[in-house]
Structures are given as C-alpha cells and as structure tokens.
Length: 424
Ligand code: DON
Image (cartoon, rainbow, N blue to C red; front, side, top):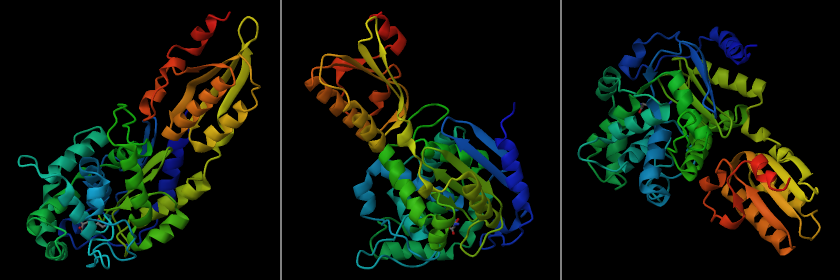
C-alpha cells in the first residue's frame, strides 16, 4: 500500500494551477525576471516526514518569510523583555512596508512588517566576525537540516531600489529604535531576505516550529518552547499583514509570506506546509499559495480553531496486574496537557483509599507539558496520602524534557513489562 498523501498534494497543485492571477514583485528587479509559472508544495509532519510535489527542487529567496526566524533568533539570544522594548506585537492592519510607528511608544507595531523586521534584525547580537545575516543563515540551515546560501543577485538587485526600506531605517534611527548606522542594518535585513530555500527546506523549517522547537529529524532542540509560542502567535496575528483577519478566518494557520512567492505555515503539533508560486497579490502574498492554503485547510480540517478532542484519548487502558491482581496499571497515551491531566486526575479520583500499588505508565505518551507533569505529580502525592504506593514508569525519559522537579522516589526508567515481572 502507498500512502495517498503525495497523490493528494499533486491533486491540490493541479486544481490551483490554472489560477494565473497576480503579478511578479517587480519592485525588486531580479524578482521580476523569474519564471512566473513555477509551482511547488510541501508538507512536513512532526516526526520528520516530508512530502513534496511540483518544482520542489527550485530555490527562491525567503524575503519576508525570514522575518519570524530573525525574531526567533533575537528572542532566543536576548530574551523577550529586551525584544519587546523595541518591537510590539500588535497587528498593524497596514501594508508590509508602511511608514508608521505605534502611537505613544514610538516603536514598530510588530516584527512582521518591514519596520519591525529591520528593528528585529538589529536585535540579533552584533558579532565582529559574523554578520547578523550570516548568523541567521546558519540558524536557518540548522532548522532546515542542510546548508542554505544567499542569493547575491537578488540581494544586490534589492539594494539598488531599497529607498523605502532605507527611509524606514532612517525613521527608526531618528526615534532611537535603531542604535546603529541605519544603512548597515537595512543592508543586513535585505541580505537576510535573500536566503535561498526550496519548499522542502521551508516545510522542514516549519516542522521544527510545529514540533515545539525540536528538529524532527535530528531530535535536536533548536528553540525554546516559549520562543516558538511567541513566534507562532505573532505569525498568526501579524504574519499576513493587512489580510491577517481574512487569513485567520479562512485558513486559520500561523503563516508568513514572502514577495518571491513563498508562504510558510505551521499548525502547532501537527504539520508544516510550504508553497511556492511567484505571482503575488496586493498584500504581497502568493495568489496560488493563498488558494492552496485555503483549500488544504478546508479539505484537511487544518483550521486552528477546529481544535482537537485529545482529552478523549489520554487513558489507553486501565487494568489489574500482578499474581494476585493487586497492582493497578494506568497506561496513558497522547499528549499530557491541562485537559488530559484533568481527565486523568478525575479517573484517579475513583481509586478508593488503601495500600494498592498504582502504576502510571507514560510509555505511550508523545509529550508531557510542564502543566501535565505538575498535575501528574500532584496526583501522585494525593494517592500517596491515601495510602497507595505509586510508581511512574517513564522508560522514554519524557519527564526529563519538562521543567518540573523530578520526584525520583516514584520514577522507574525500565519498560512496563519488565517492571511488572517482579509482581508475577
Ligand atoms: O523588504 C522588502 O520589501 C522585501 N525584501 C521583503 C518584503 C516581503 O517579502 C513582503 N511580504 N510578503
């Protein structure tokens, strides 16, 4: 049997192919010269599988799709408080290159519009030997799982016509948001926009965000969970500029577009999606790209607000084990967040006080959030107060990924079956 997912992606591509609306981004001369018919789509899963179709080997520049990652790098390096002093998080409802600042605070409204992105670029810590754009290229290469490069033609081409970005740079320097030479910062920002990717790279990059900051193929933690949450929140509210409300209601996936024709979307915990088609609309979004996202969200039920009834699945099974059937085993599965923990604790509440051994098996959990770990141990303590002996089987070491202080006394790292042998 072959999975139908690649066939579905091909089908979506062919359905959207006839749409030739939109124009190439001709304010960057080099982008006006690309083949407007190139078309590609890729999807990644949080376990590291990439499906792709169409012109999936063609490289194009990230442009504004680099903005959320510069924001991520700045957050990771200098922290939220410092970043928030310089860039807000409010949707602007304005074009991406609008010359404006937030009232009163005089800082850019968000990091997705150009003024905010130029500022964000300046927040990547200065290093004498490695430019900020190069730091971002290396960071994005880590996310993509391969070495990315700059497109020097697109870079020099944009430099020649970057009057608007320069004026943004000087405005930001005037109000003290930029503290260095605006020319150098704007050039660095334009360089970051010229990092080249394919849709497969973008899907992989999106997959890291969908997977809470862990590179799905290498298992390496590249971003803090709190940084991922901040970046995705801003992508959701500001990533599609003055079409953000329309996008949120029709597509419902945190996303970012670029004027070279790419759109990257991240459905937390589920999938990353990337499209490429160079004709863009008046907001700067790929026309076919929007079409594809709308279709896939509708057909595949990917809208964020659809929610997932995950709490239904937390208890995989509950049974008696041991020679005398005196060991109570709770096998959990799925993701342990607040709703699932609430359900688990409600089930454990049914245990009458006594000296039963209670085993909570985490083997089939895919993730434990801090709140899940906290509530789990709260339940453990209450069961102990009721007289029970409680054991938490964590053979995969999931709890070590949480910030919660470990309760070593109840933790068992071996597999459930082996652990239960002592009771046979
Ligand atoms: O700064 C610019 O104008 C371009 N380098 C990037 C703009 C962009 O991609 C807008 N988004 N769709």
